[in-house]
Image (cartoon, rainbow, N blue to C red; front, top):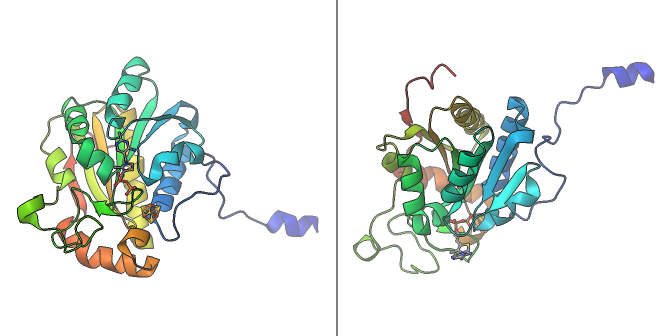
Length: 257
Ligand SMILES: Cc1ncc(C[n+]2csc(CCOP(=O)(O)OP(=O)(O)O)c2C)c(N)n1
Ligand code: SF4
């Protein structure tokens, strides 16, 4: 018996930086995967006791229940401003915001642009599912041309609503950005690449190099009206051509981290 116990090896367990709470996310939603990867990164870097997260409005509004680190809650789009304040008064903390596209690229566009441009030494995880998930699937700035949403029942008409905003491409032009990359989580290979980017983003902040932003091209099976599998296929076919994966800015010094 003792021998058998000795041979047992735990190969998979809950990261320490996640609480033992069942999340409210819909089946197949990428929010849950990203939460886990951030928590794994916090564990691996040994920063659980000095990390502060900022929750947005949107489906991830309850993120403070799920991460076992200090957390604050910001009003719609204001997470980078709150993160700026927290980091400036406690520069030894690791501060990250977690924001959807409605939160970051609609009401919060001003906040994110200026925080990145100031080169605040903070990190943003930006979850782009091309839609307002929590409030019922309305058009977001990132909604694709022709995409049907509850507020664009005939598809997004770019003549009326403008063009989808490519956040990474925009942020990469700003001098204060140190690390700006786009990833996804549609299969194990992409999940591994995303995890690496999350770790790098935290390391950029730990090294004091400036703003780090990881966009995750994500899904919303519920409001897209698809099964989880269909939503991943739709994401790959329709979202990735418009939001190509890649590194948009990797400042000097980041490669060596
Ligand atoms: C100040 C403020 N304005 C508006 C809202 C309403 N609201 C809540 S969630 C949301 C959309 C969030 O969408 P997104 O950021 O894309 O996140 P998702 O739900 O898709 O994860 C809106 C408009 C709010 N909660 N607070
Ligand atoms: S509504 Fe969409 S974004 Fe929100 S938890 Fe469900 S699948 Fe995820």
